[in-house]
Image: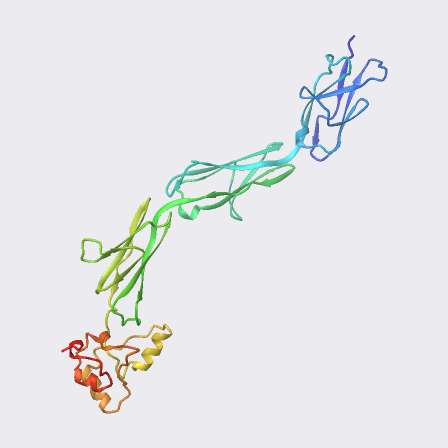
Length: 341
């Protein structure tokens, strides 16, 4: 006996709505029990009342092919009815090509994938919170270090939009912006050694720092910092696995300084300025020699002699002095071997 079963149901519903599927037959049956199938598998978790299958809150997972049968005659199923479900994008994700290390200068392509019905119409790309492009793919030719960061894709169709989780683009590049900073180990511009520090921007970070002195073919040191004991111009070379770059040379001229004179700043003023780290120009050597300085002191001018906690005779090795004068001016510990001729 042919039961002539068929399913009556809407062809398409929107996610979140309700839907009822009805199993109908032209035959007269006595208290039949209906069995429902989805994609060929019996349904056991849905609400079935008499000959009706009720979908309370439709989701995208409810889309499929539905058929029905009467218990005892399961081999006589109805023709299948296809139910389509409209829903906004979901499972939005981004893939990166190439998948390995990204080196500055190479090309990178991001691809957005999502599940939506109808299919996604608009893809929008973001770097951080800034929109940078549209389309299913986003390409960055000749990528730079500035292009590194977090990227997301927003997918949109007629029923809504959703954004992917962020993917991180990490751009590897050789050292750049290499520079050298100077700091003295003692008073500013009055130290016997000067500390040079090399800084740079690189990814991965710089592995090797090498120091050079202009006019010298071989390296003079290595490491992030270098203590220069001689005057001259120095530069550093920063290197990682992707390349190397050298800084501009910086002159090291702050190894010694002449004593203060009355028209620049007194020792006391100079000492106070140095203590607070201000940039005070050191006394110059062409305004007064040690002899002028001695004469000004004898005449009672405002030019106090150096003291041991601001500048010692060692700092003034470039200024000719007389040991007798230094010793008579309050430096009894100075011996003749420490004085310049």
